[in-house]
Length: 404
Image 1 (spheres, helix red, strand yellow):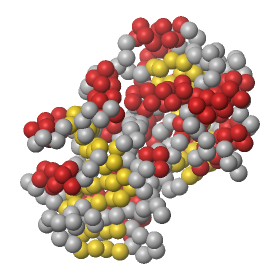
Image 2 (cartoon, one colour; image 1 turned 120 degrees about the vertical axis):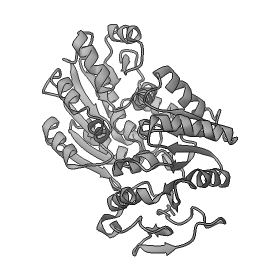
Image 3 (cartoon, one colour; image 1 turned 90 degrees about the horizontal axis):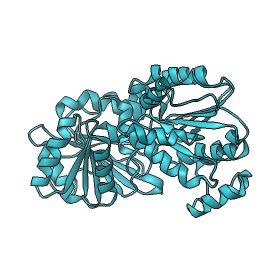
């Protein structure tokens, strides 16, 4: 059992880089995965968000690139934000000058990417669309890729990238190491794994259908007309940074403007924003220039901001799995967090689907009834009936497990 990163037999320069980053004790997914990747195994990995997956594949991949100077690596992610964050983390780990990098994402100027590619990068991080653009232009060669990482594969398939991933893989050698990571493991992920990996070792840490234990989940029943008022009550009761999820791009702008008029400093992010603007919004939130970020699901994956203390689902997600990814934006790196769900009568079927994902068939009847709240506890699940009118009871009904 690895007590620290020295136990893996990593190169000394890489260990020094990890020490500078204050990486001392491997997380469970790192502890299980790093030795397997160093041994050359393909991986089908799953772990709850915020558990150190980037280090789990990045650390051994860099070690392999240091060992074999003729090998390249490609990491694919579903969103620009996640690609940027993965690249930032990986670059801190790289201890040698000969491993140059390129970030290939949409919304960024092509000339900048051409310059990066002209330097013969050995480690490329990007989104499937822009990677395909470069392959079609002939500006990207993947014939030396010996390490392929598909990060948050479930999200990439949800976003319709399956065909593009298939096109990209055709440009790579058959002899390669493939590392497939996914927060959830539906049937299409298992099928994809069988197609792209060879004798992959299954590595799982925690449940793939449960949020992190340190997230307290609160369920508030309301009506459409009272929903905004309930949101304001929650914002006034809670301290710290807040990420609010809404259904539509227009909804983010509208809600953010409304909150600003109510003296709650906020900004909005969605898929139609130009990349430069998206980067500014995220950086402003990271720097605590404003307390509240209103977002569509474009931010549900890959937004790694440690100080997010609360996630509020103003609109429930269309896909139950996205609930796990949304609320996983809080309680990062061992911190505690809270998730609030504003449930209108029209949301009952969505909440039942979410509850069923989290708890199995026992949750099929949850989410109906104006004041019904559930609390998953150790052993038996209890059901609480409380009114929602003011006081401390507001938002304290649906509580997830908290770590001791």
